[in-house]
Amino acid sequence: MRTGKKRTPITPAVLTKEDKKQFNHELLVLAIPLALQNLLGALVGASDALMLGRLNQASIAAVSLANQVSFVMSLFSGSVIGAISVLVAQYLGKGDQRNTKRFFAMGIRYAFGISMVFFLLAFCLPKQLMRIFTPEKELIRIGAGYLRIVSFSYLFMGLSQPYLMIMRTSGRVKTSLKISAVTVVVDMTADLFLIYGIGSWKGLGANGSAYSTIVVEVIALVICIVESHQKDHVHPDAESLRFFSKAFEADIWKVIPGMLASALSWGLSMTMHQFILGHMGTDATAAASVTGVAQQLIQCLSMGLATGGGIILGKMLGQDQFEKAKAYGKRFFKVSRINGLINAGLFLIVGPLVYFFYVLEPQAKTYLIQMLAFSMLYMFAFAYNTIYTVGVFPAGGDSRYDAISVIIATWCFAIPLALLGCFVFHWPVMVVYMVMCCDEIIKFPFLHLRFNTDIWIKNLTRSEA
Image (cartoon, rainbow, N blue to C red; front, side, top):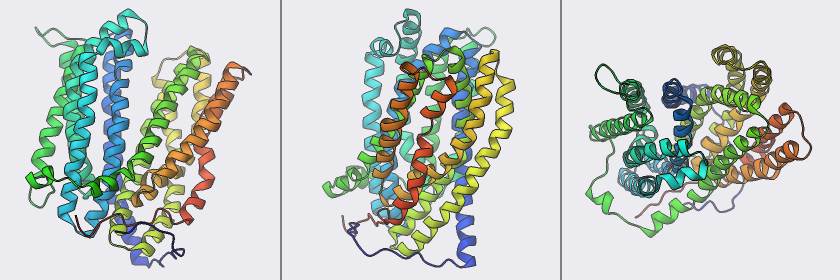
């Protein structure tokens, strides 16, 4: 096993015209479907919010708060699945199907264990969980009923996520995209039927959204299992499900802590953003919420490129192609610049759409214009950071950099300064907003330094079980 011990700097290979053409082809084949899949996932949440929003304000508020439980669960399960996907990509690159299957099975066990914990909490203690987020009795009543029902979807979600991971990592991104497309259609149809009711069927309100979520997750899991048993596809068997190795567990836990620390730091920072904005007034909160919708839609491309890049480099590192992997990694700086410019350009399209679509007060609309303008710079830096901290560096197991950069840029600078600006110095809304969101810009200059250390260039695979 390569341990990544200190060695002489790796000189990147010289890429031929054919290498560059192959790089572009491989990246686009992976990134475009992955970006569309992320977009479809965002649309599922947007459709739920839109339909509940037309029901009543209390329902959308209660469900939004209740879904913080699944959000926290996704931070834990996403970190574990992300860590396992790093190893799966390298073993696939090595051509080791047996150990690929074993890590896949380990992912199922971990993800299902996490989902079981959150299922028990949401099913047994829904009111107690809702009281963490709100003291309003009506919101607690609606949210607790929703949580108790939707908790069953966590179990199916925990099982389906490893299957979707293995599809993406093995290059079957079109299949995972089709599953996402099916879930969007099913979710919208089920929401319409279960929330509002049709004909003699009486709608279930917020609880209807919970039932539709269960339906969507069940269908997604069934399709995943069926697809995994197609010819030449990876699926768990009795041997891999029974397999246990302290060495393999140790390999996973070399990557998980960094990813988990990064995810939890980021997730908690989003909560702090809401806390700070909530004290800046309704206009600031509304404008930032709409800006967040635009950012989530545009971020999909960066996430697709990052995931696709991680898969490509992971397979190379599993084959000990270190020089070529570094050359490909260096080429991602150009990809990041192009992606940053595309992100900024997309704001020129998406910005006016969200501006006219949402009904806001005049002051909120003024804030919205300013926030969208700042977001063009923010999303340029986001493209750079995401492609490297989510894709390139984790491909070789380097998950610590993202965690450290988030802690320093966000928790040692952006959040404390924004809190001071809001509660002590009483800065204008836009100054606080820009300071609060400058973490991506702060992290941006240090990427080259980390890249050149070669810390991320590791083969994490083992020759023997």
